[in-house]
Image 1 (spheres, helix red, strand yellow):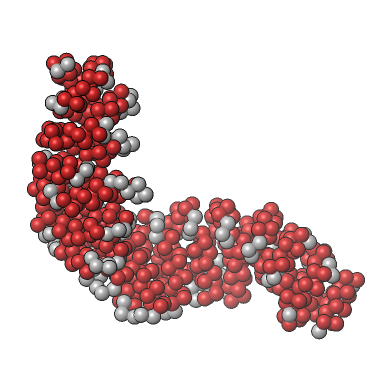
Image 2 (cartoon, helix red, strand yellow):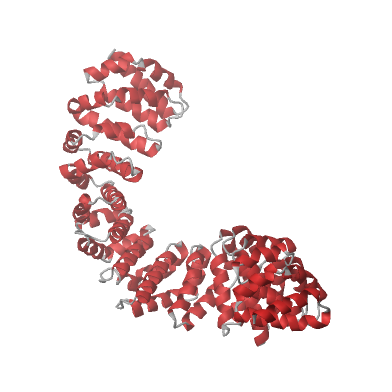
Length: 604
């Protein structure tokens, strides 16, 4: 074989057109026998340099020349030499041929050269190859002839290799309008397994790009994918479709189209089929299906459509996941409730129909050594449900705060963050609950500890906000004293300097209540935390919002009864700062400045 190959290569270099065909046949035979070794010899003997001329001749040998290049380019080490030998321009020229065999072998050659090769892709890009291939696919899309199906598969593969993992080339294909054409192929050629798989892989690549979503949304991709999904029995095929559905379902318009096309019913069916299985592929499908279900609920319109006023069968099925024994379904059920709980009407309905109890039972199952993602999801759902005012007292009566407090010992920041947010939502406008929680020494101590969680800004911020909320909503001297004794005052003073105005304001109102309700007890902490300097800074800072200036002046008036604080106020010449604010453009600030100035003058 080796001798024949060497002879053929030599002959090819010297040959006239008549003997070329036999040499090409010999090369193809050798490549079929040992591709790597033969490709190496072809490179060694400089045969690649002859290929452009052979391609340009365009005769009966042309498909064989293109076939040899396609075979050679299966090897990574041959792709750059193919580009360097100048094969791309003549190959791209052959894309204008009317001969189907030439088109097929040329498509294979270009596709293989582009595979994982930057040089190959750049050369095809420069020669305009992708545009011609895209036009071919568009013009052949409606043909159901088997030979055309094969050619379309090769062309789709070529475009995929050309653009894979390359955002700018994928964007180029999107601009060329490839997406509607590929969606059409999926509809017309749904019986052609190789072609539909190629389309799915191409969709998977393109769907990652944000710019593709609008084009996908203007096609009937949702119907085609759902139709294809229903036909699949093999796990791998379903996985391929899932890989396209997941990025597409991030778009709200497509979410709704998928819901309308019946994807939800397909997902529920997969869940029902896989929930009791412990086979790896079934566990993976269960996770993918339930995750996708939750993703569909992130769109407002798709979520509301599935909620159906709380009577929707999908909504009911998803609820049944919460008490299940499967962690993945518990997680998806809790996340789904959190997503349904995105408007007051849904939240009120869900609380009235006993969903809180389901979530509390779920949380109780995860207190000791629990699943962190399930804890996080269930707390998210409770937090959302607690937003409407009418739900707060009902949820408190149901014992939500007691169950939530069981997670105070958690060392997981995501759980800590949601726990804090849930309690803060629950006590908003609920004085009794705020007092009950605010006098809970264990809770206050944990909050003070988390106020120093510098590695977790979210937990730190929420702890401060809850500390402030306990005081603001209870307006209770007992709560104030618990916070002072727990060491919370300095954190509220630091919170007053936050970059977020809402947090500054909450801190100042809480500090004002501390000063009004128990100044004697707080005096030492106020001095140690440099409260007066902080207030001076807030009042002199021209970027401070009117509410901040107003509440800072209220607080100054409240601390004047303390001798050491009064002295600090005098030493910092507050009277001049306040006097300057009497002409502030905000009337409320100007009025409070006059009152504060009078107070400072009277006590100087």
